Structures are given as C-alpha cells and as structure tokens.
Image 1 (cartoon, rainbow, N blue to C red):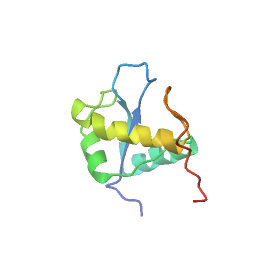
Image 2: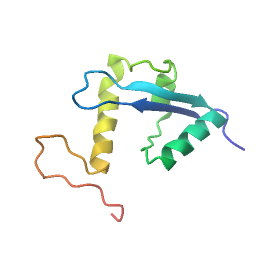
Image 3: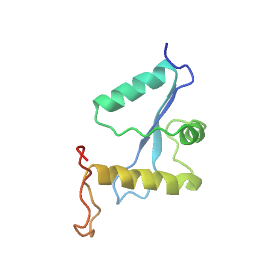
Length: 103
C-alpha cells in the first residue's frame, strides 16, 4: 500500500549568475508524489527527505519562488548536493573532494 500522505516537492535553481531564488517546479501528494520521486531518481536528481521542509514547501504554488525565510536551508541543501557531485564554485581551492560511495 502506498502512503497517501507522501509529499514530493521539486525545486529548480538556475546558474550561480542567476539572481532568482529557487522555484517550485513539481508538487504532488500520494501516488503523484511517488511518480515525481521515481522520475527524479531515473533522471539522476538528488532526493532529500525532510517531512518538515516538504510540509513548508507544499504550501507554495507551482512556479513560485521560495521565500527568503527558506533561503538558508535550501542554500545548504544545494551546496551539499554540489559537494556530493564533486562540483565546486569558481574560486574554491582543491581542498575538498567528492564523496566516495565506498566510504
């Protein structure tokens, strides 16, 4: 039995030169949430599970930018996802390395 209370919220963030905040690009509950998660995984999109954050994000409309109050937590998630993928912002030295799955 699938969880009817499951939520999935998809965010998109542009380039670092982009001055816009991340936007809600997908949103679903129950079976639709399961489909969003499946498609994200198949597309190589990183998934973060946080029921409190998804509850807050679920209150916003598709296409809406996240509010300034969520900038810090979303920025941390974006930065962490970059590290997991071995990406670094311009100007960073080579003191960090990508996470190795065999750790």
